[in-house]
Amino acid sequence: GGPDECIALGDCYCEAIRPGRVAQPANSWSNAGFVFAGLAVLAHLRVRGPALMASDSMYPRLSGALGIFLGVGSFAFHGTMRAWGGAADLISMYAYVAFIVGYDLARIGDWGRGQFLAVFGAVTLLPSIGLAVIPPEHGKWVFAGLVVVALLLETAVSVPALRPWAPKPIDPVRRPWFWAGLGSFIVANAVWNVSHTGGPWCEPESFLQGHALWHLLSAVAVWCFYLYFLAEREPRTVPVG
Image (cartoon, rainbow, N blue to C red; front, side):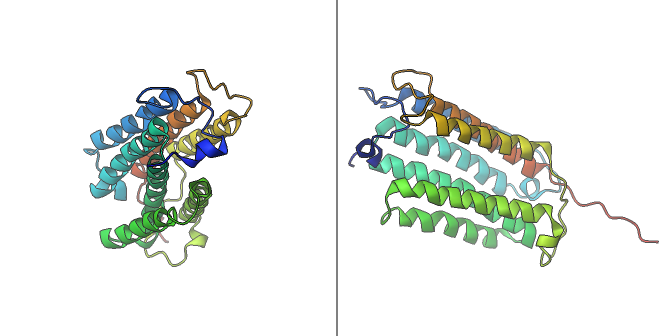
């Protein structure tokens, strides 16, 4: 495949492209954080509880696999600097957020596997197909839009008035793991914004890369969001009379 468009745009996330098999070592190997997070989720499958994540092994298995896919997709991009690697990176990001969107809708609507998989597949596939007709650089904005949708759905989970159609009540109490995951993701984005090519934290020749820190903090968020979904409990009922 041809080179990724970031080379022509002059913005390949700061780190200099080096000779050898791995084009950007720091930005590539930091993706081990995603792999470790995904493996940690898979190793945690024995936990059981009332949450959908704990009652059906498909969900934690898929969550863990997608965490690993995030690492593999991003490594494919930073390690090769080829267009196919950039596409793999974006598709892995779409797939992970699609999981959260589908999972939240399954929680709100008390869905079965089939409905969840239909939404997960559609939300992953449609923007992935779009990469064939839109520049990958714009694909990041699609990812940002999916993140906003996921946050809106999480808000609906928290506020019963926003989901009057929901057939099943959900405990709206926010768990510390949610805030830890969201905080890690926000800090990761802040680091990304100041460490891109030309940013104040950009040192192309350094092996200490802000974009690598973005990977590690985002991997922490993957683990925290899994624990948040796992910690969901049945809502308490208040006796009448």
